Structure formats: structure tokens, C-alpha cells
Image 1 (cartoon, rainbow, N blue to C red):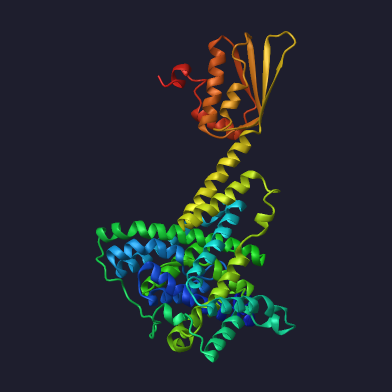
Image 2: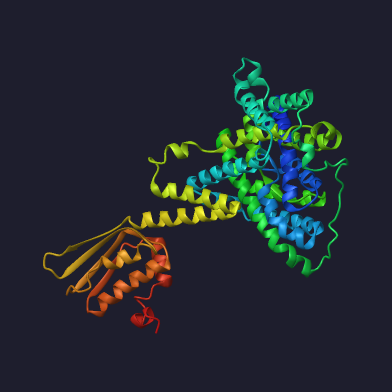
Length: 495
């Protein structure tokens, strides 16, 4: 128990604390921006980010992953806040948390097994594009100082790690933020700062219960929003966990992460914060800055609150150009450039799935839509591919009275028509043997195809024998098949 605690919290103290500082600084403008998107006060996003980060560091299933208020979640809140106000948003956040805990107990985290690598790649590339696009408002209609500061920040981020010894000790994004802030204050450059994005809170969050009627009407109002928040939050969190798994070459408990996200959102709602989930951008900042354990996320959450409450005067002076440089670095590092370089080598179906996922996410700004389209396309391509692995060969006995059909492969809805067309119904023959030893029947469509073949052959006076059904196929054929039942032909055509 003690060794497990040390591994989860104290095995990488310096790296986690430094990474937590960088993440905390990057979270402040994003939390404020997401609050503005949702139509609420900046402190709602800041309190949410603090609470979610601290809680998830303790109860989450993926050490080193950062969770806080996110843009994907904020977009889903706009209508609820506009029509019903902040209190209903807090209630929806709490209900969202309970739904996510329920999903964890149902072990829905294991559904990530059905998300193909092409969908994950498309998801990552789309997020990289969205992160970059989100920085464009800070780079349009501005003075040359902003471009110079941003370029200088990128130079620090990519060149500082090349310095001997010190370059590997201090995270370059932290150096970028400190150096550009000091430069802006020393020279007196008039550029947009964190303080210009909104007023930072000056008090700690307090426990509160949403002031909404506890009745069915309230439930009907918040349930659709809570369900959407729960789905998008879990989807983004599971995808981010998978990406961090790959980056750190470790595994994580997806079902525990579902429950952890739920507990964190309940805590956020009770502390006056909005719903949130894992953040791929900040998670990558954390990993690339040296964060590996739960301590990095805890540090980010605690420092975020301390900085906005007690050091707001200094934090508000951080140039947005410095944070834009950090987020551009995240965008460049997040994008899977290999997916572009290897387009010619990758199967066409995988490329289509990846590009479709990117296009839908970028167009709708909704991660759930993009992943849904990607998974659907991947499933269709897979079904079509497996359907081609069906082969039926036949042999005629020496006396010409018996034909044996050997079925090899998978019989299910896309391959059932091919299965039917493999039989010669015009041949006048006494007996037909259908050998299914090397075949498998998966669904009612395949069973209906077998019924059709057997009944059409028997209708012409041919004796039909079925051999070699495996146990699983035999079970589904016995349950849904009609070819051996009375009035089989009439039942097949629905009479």
C-alpha cells in the first residue's frame, strides 16, 4: 500500500511540480475563455478547473492526465445558461456527474476497445487543429509586438531544451511564460494580458446547493443537457487517456476514470463550477513538461486557485502572446504528422475514417459527432472487408446424384446475399449437402439466408442435408431458423 502510494504520488516530485506550474498557468486563460463561451462569470470556469483537477488527481484512473473545464463541454451549456441561468447549469453538472459514475459501474469505459486507431488519430488531429484555431483571435487585428512576442515564445520553447543541463531541468513552456512576462513589464509593451480576459476571483470557492426546485420539471429541463455533457465528457476523457497511455507507455483504468470524472463533476457543481473533463492539450503539456503522477494534476489545481486568488495581480499581467505560444506548441505536438506522411502507405479505408473524423469535429466543434462518424465508418468498412472473406466451393459426386457445397468464412448481413448466390437452384439433382464445418453464422440475416437456400432446394424435390454447424452457429440457427419447421416456406415469406 505504501509503495503504491509513493509510486502514484512521490516518484517524480520535481517533474510533477514544475509541470503542474506550467499547466496551472495555461489553465487560467482557457478556463476564463470557456466561461465566456458558456455565458457565465469567469470564476465559474476557474472554480471548476480547480475542483475537477484536485478531485480527479485522487480518484481518477489515469495518473498524469489533466482534467478541468473544457471548450467541448462549454459549447453544450450555452442554451441552458441562456434560457434558465447559472443555477440550472450547476444542477445539470451534478446530474452529469451521477450519470458518469453510473457509466463507470456499467463498465462503459471498456467500449474504447471498439474505437479504431484511425478514429483516435483523427480525433487527435482534429483537436490539434481546434487548439490552433482557438489561438487565431489573439493573432488577428493586433500590433506587430504580439507577433514578435509569440515568435519569441516559440523560439524559447523549442530552443531552450537544447541548452546543456538546465534545458532538461526546467520546462521550456514555463521559461517562455516567465521571460515574456518579465520582458513585457520591463519594456512596457501594451499588449493583451490574462487580466483583459475577465475579472479574476478574489475569494476561495464555498460549498453551495443549486437553488432550483427539486421536482420532475427541473429534471426534464436538465436531463438532456446532463446526458450530453456526460457522453462528451467521458468520450473526450477516454480518448485523452488512451493518448496519454501511448505517450507514457503505461496503461490506465478506464472504468475508474469514468467514476472519477463523475465524482469530480459533482464536486465542481457543489462548489459553483461548471462541468469539465480531461483536456488533451493540457495533458500533453503536462507529459512533455515532465509530469507523470497524480501529483502533477493536484499541483496544477491547487496552484491555479492560489494564483488567481492570491497572486491575481501578477497573473493578470501575463501576456496572452506567451500562452498563445505555449498552445501553438501543444497544437504542433498534438498533431500526428506521421498520419499525413504515410497517407500513401495506409489503407484507403483507414485514411477515409481519419479524414472524416477530422472534418466532422472541426466543422461541428463537437468531438462526439466526429468520433461517432469515425466509428460508424470504421464499422462499415470492417463489415465490408470481412464479407469478402466468404468462399463457397462445390463438388459433384461421381454418379452425378449428389452435390456438396463447402462454405468457408463468415456469414452475416453483408455476406448473406453472396452466400445465397453461390448455390445453383436450377440444377436438377437428387441430394445437396451443405458443409458448414468451416463457416460461422452470426445474425438473423445469415439464418434467413440459410432458410432461403434450403427451402428453395427442397421445393424442387431435392433432399438437403446440413453438416458441421459449430455450437454457436447451431444455437442461433435452431432459435431463429424455420427451414426444419412445419410450413417453412410460408413462414419464410411471412404468411
